[in-house]
Image (cartoon, rainbow, N blue to C red; front, side, top):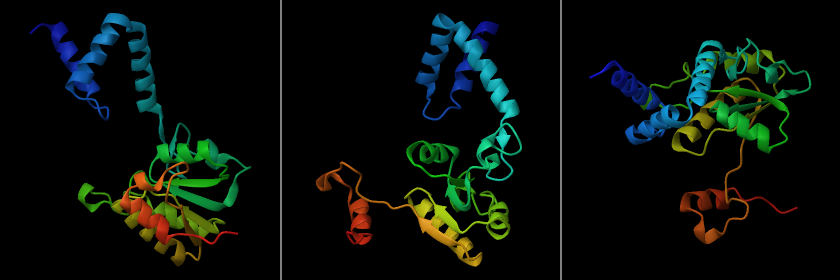
Length: 200
């Protein structure tokens, strides 16, 4: 096999590290870059190299950051009394873009999952406990996903909050806005029904 085909095979294999990218998709991407957009490929390579080298984690919230303290944690205009816990940086971004939340965040970088080797240590429990005890946090907003692991993580986080005398709240889950009951899955409908609220 020639050196060129070795490079091509290496490129295709490297692209497979991305989620949802199998052998065929990786091959299609590699061919596209080489046939139609070498400048774009070079730009992608530079951006990837810089990101991998320079992006780390904020020492306060664990979100991705180029500096020791991220811009959200460094902001003086945010509410220091409210701390929202999310599983991933993508969840943080979704809340930031869709809501008017002006508090601070803590990113677990996962959820409790013993089968995947994710326990409290991997989720930054020491740092979170320090923030609950030392900071001015009065409310811990638990925004983990409504999965089995997410619910277990939420329960565990509630215990941490109670131990620190901090009020714990959980994101509401239920029927989506604009949804029709006949199309909502049974688990979601049961949860929504059980969490019903009084109309004001």
